[in-house]
Amino acid sequence: MTSKLVSNEAKDSFQNVNRELSHITHQNQAFNQNDIPNNQEIHPDEVE
Image (cartoon, rainbow, N blue to C red):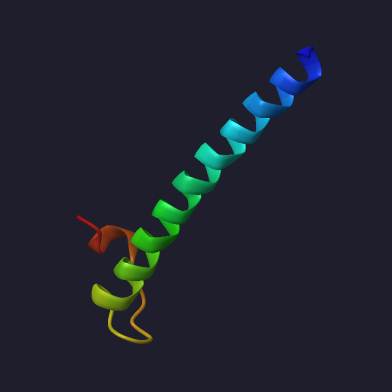
């Protein structure tokens, strides 16, 4: 019983992590597609 509870909690945690990762991945893809012209270098002092 206890091990089943633990595995369910672990599964929930992984699902949460996967959701977060997929959200971040979508944000990065949108950022990469929309905000940066191809091959343009980013210089730290130009970042707002």
